[in-house]
Length: 38
Image (tube, rainbow, N blue to C red; front, side, top):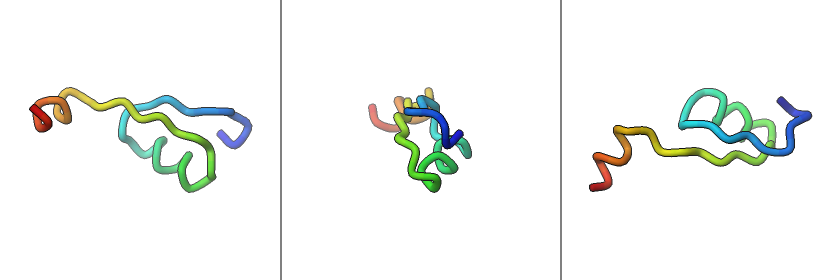
């Protein structure tokens, strides 16, 4: 994971692990997030 330039994922353990390793992360909202935001 540390060899990647960017990780694109949903809000999951992989997103948090990448953040802890200082790897840039783009998170995509899941279906539940969209309903909560209206």
